[in-house]
Every structure is written in C-alpha cells, then in structure tokens.
Amino acid sequence: MTNIDTKRETNFAVTLTPSSFGTNTYVARVPRKTVTTDQILDLVVAHNKGIDRFQVAHAMELLKKEILEQAELGFSVDIMEICKLYLAPLHGVRSLMPESETVTGFEARFAVNDRLRKRLGGMTAAVTAVVDPAPQISLIENPVAKDGEPKDVLKATFSARLTGRKLKVGGEGGGIFFVPAVTAESPGSEEMLPSKNEGDWIKVPDDFVTHNADKHLEFYLPRDLESGRNYFIAVRATERNGVALKNPSTGMSRVPVMVGA
Image (cartoon, rainbow, N blue to C red; front, side):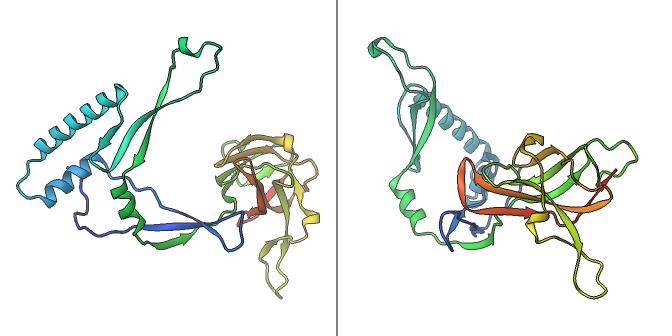
C-alpha cells in the first residue's frame, strides 16, 4: 500500500513568475503534485472505515473500462460530475470533395463542469516563492577534459558545456558571453566579481553554439579569450518560446572559470 497523509488539510500554494509584458505583474502557477490511483484508493479506505480496498479498486477498473469504451465510440463522457471527456480531431481537412474524406487521428480534451468551476473559483492560496525568470547556470564543464584533468578549467579554442535552467538563447542581443573577472574594490579583498562594463564582455558567436536547449548549452570558446584569465559566463535571453521579452533577462555564473592554454 502507498503511504499518504490522510488528513484533510491543504498545502495548496502557488509560485509567481514576473511577467515580461507588464511592470509589477506576475504569472501565477500551481506546482503540479500528482496523486496516484493507489493513493486515491488509500484515502478512500482511510476515510471510510469498513470498505474493502480491493472491491473499490475493482469498481474503479470497471468505471475506467466503460469510460474509455464510450469515449472510443465517440461519446462525450461525464466523469463523475467533475469534468467531461470529449474527442477532437488532430487535424483539419483540405479537400475538393470533403464528403468523401476520412478523418484520421483524434485527441482527448476535457471541459470542467460548473460545480467544480464554482468550487475552484472561490479558493485561495498562499504564495510560496517568486521564481527568478533569468537563466540559471548550475554547472560549467569542459566536455573534452581527459581523465585526471580538471573539468572546471576550459581550454582555449575548445568547447564548453553549461547545465542549468532556462538557458536556451535566441533573439537579437541575446547569447552567451564571457565576462572578465575583476577584483572587488574593497581594500584587502581578493573576491572576484564580473565586470560591469559590457563593452569588455566577449560574445560567443552564434554559429559557435552546437547545442541550444533550456537545460544544456554547448559551444566553442571565442578565439579572442585570454589564456590564463578568469571569466564569469553570462547567458542573456531576449526572447522565450519565440516571443520577444520586454526586458532582456541575464543570468550570471556564481563563480568564475579559468581559461587555460
């Protein structure tokens, strides 16, 4: 049996992500936490003493079978007054004789019933976090490092790999940049900070990027980097999902990396 907290208490909450299309505007999202069928069965048994779990499971299987069968017959199915399952074609039809065509391929869609819509419309939830929309670099690696060689030292004219979130680059002004590391101005401090002078930033040419995805970036190093110098790496996004951002979003690595010979 699956363990699950049987108390009828909510930990319902939302996260906020700053919107690119308005000042002080946020997009609210509900973190997806799935309750499995086994957990539903555990809850039914826990809240209804004396009910046989296997009988409930058998009844659920029979319901599922009938719901799927009626949907495959083309009916809209009311699922326990929670939502309606209905079918929709995957594609339209272009034809000079549409009456003779056969439509192939359908997908399932759901429409929420009024009862559930009203209950959800009156719910409230706390905000758990405001999500940083900027690219986040969690790891910088030298993918061509041999056994025994440090992976955090990049080799000039070779390649680098970034791992993180929201890393995919694209759009005018966006890209990957090597930012010279400078010493903090505090007396006696040896802390390295990224240069604020963007004129000193060195961009990775677009055609040097060999893998461009949200969680991974791979690219060749620019030819004009100085060997033996420390650089931070910045990723700047000026569009997301093909839509231009109102304000470019820049993520900076927390630590610098050395560019070796």
